[in-house]
Length: 289
Image 1: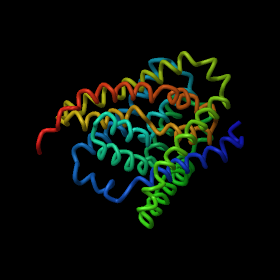
Image 2: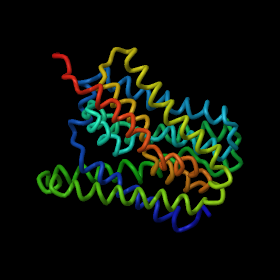
Image 3: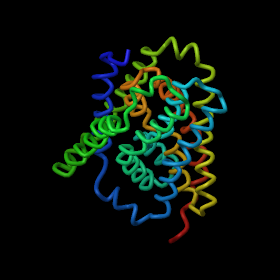
Image 4: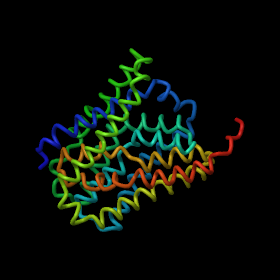
């Protein structure tokens, strides 16, 4: 199954399209913002790089998921924020600039974080397919399907910014359509396993989604970030780049894609509800300074 056309051709191309679309919306300023908002970015990335994967480990253990599903859940938890998170943060009147910066940096850092947590998860849960998991090969795969397309998108924008801004909405629509097709493809590819384990996987994925948003928002507020910054961080942890998790998982065994595919079925609904709630709280003008 892992050698199927879906896993080896369609998924990498689909993720590359999505990452190019993200690159079209980024500029060097989105990476430099880490020096402008150091505390917000540091706390947000700490949540993405540490809290989210740790929660995935704990939840997989709590629900006694079988090794393949447990590894898939950790792979999802270690994935960077998704591009739609930026839109939801904007709709919630959160700190959109912080959200974009977190998405940009975590997407590049995924070259290290995703292979690292994938390796740790396969060892910890004793996944039988761990012989197929190579840290070096996973780094190369993530580099080819995330960072390089992202850089291509940024290069295109730098060369023709006006034209890029003009076509960006259409490209994002295409990227969203591609995302939907990827999720549908993953569900079809592993439909029997999803149907057999839907209850456990759905509960675990939903728990991860809600817990990640709640814990990260609480940490951000305790760190004295304002509501808008905390909103951005929480939504970034609620809307992962599940296409990346599906693509990396499918390159090893499509059974690893199940948690990300199931997570994708409801992450926009839960994050959307949170965004709506925060929209009402964030209506007040931000304090000066």
